[in-house]
Image (cartoon, rainbow, N blue to C red; front, side, top):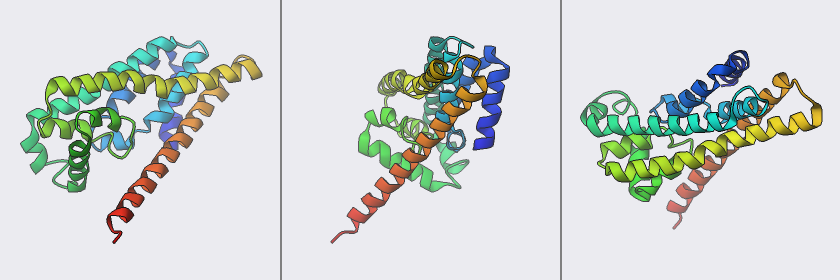
Length: 214
């Protein structure tokens, strides 16, 4: 994970004009089954926020790009699930990973339409809920409303903390901080991602323990 983050942050520093495209692609990729679980979106988006705060590219622009990417990624996953449910059930990825389908289905049944928004913030279900929502017939209007609203919240939450790191570094340490601020923001993102995953595992273990209580 750290090697991928280093490569992407290095690319951002070398090609600031493509930062918006990276923000769009990272936000979109988080919505895809299996692929989304492999993309460390939080650290990368925070690094992008730091790069934007240093003046390489418009901060508002990268936030908008991330919102559009998040909406597009979830929308495409939903469309695939809605139109190709039979193929997904009998082929990749659910034929070989039935636990993914079970997790997504249980989440949708428990939370319904608001679950689309909630899942965007949870690494364990982030990449499976949109396609499962399509497979199990969630109404398009309801899905896309939840998709859009949650993306508008999700993108700033993941980009602005990185921008704050860049701004604080600029205030206290002076200019020309590409070599410090961007990796520092990525490091903050890694820490937050690991803490969130640890909290989710602990919550899951607590839920299992409660189910087995006499």
